[in-house]
Amino acid sequence: MTDSDAAFRVEKIAAPLRYSVTESIRSAIAAGRFKAGDRLPERELCELTGVSRTLVREAMRQLESEGVITVEPHRGPFVARLSRAQAEGVYQVRIELEGLACRLFAENATDIQRQALKDAFKDLQAAARRADPQNRLRTKNQFYACMIEGAQNEALGSCLHILNSRISLLRATSMTAPGRIKKSIAELSSLMEALMARDGERACQLGQQHVRMAAEAALKLLSTDEAD
Image 1 (cartoon, rainbow, N blue to C red):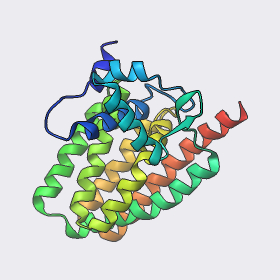
Image 2: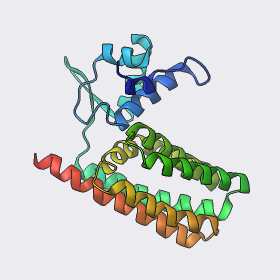
Image 3: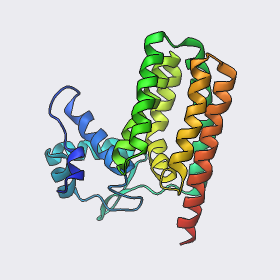
């Protein structure tokens, strides 16, 4: 196991262990440790997470139900491949949901929640300057978690949670596009200004534009992969 793989070791405390194993494997996929179409050997996953085969199998069943992995008879589990049409569908929904999340955060977030988002954005900016995709994805996910909490809409949070597995796969793809990380931070900086100014309409517009730009970057890469 490499030093970078140590980030996926599961701490056997706090959250239920099965949940932790599932999230660890999900993070490994989102960070590019396993890419679309890669086989997921059970032994390697056990070594990566430091847990038993039983827990790994339970995690794989959960990820299969979410569409993150596919299981082929007599071959085992593989990281799912998203077609361009599937990715477009995810982004269409994400544009609307995240635009709403931005609007609601601007209008509803408490001072404590606003500070939490500021702190998360600082962490994201710092991560963007480092060559560590795992940390970039972790801080991006934390930023959005703070956003959803501050939106104070349980139904919206549930919808985004359901969509999050595929969003993470696409986020990992879009962030590999040349120059995308720098552009993403610039877009989010403008969004932060609107959020802190409590301008719900502008926050919604900027949030949606950020997703559109991410979609454009990811779909270009997916088109290239399909052509290959």
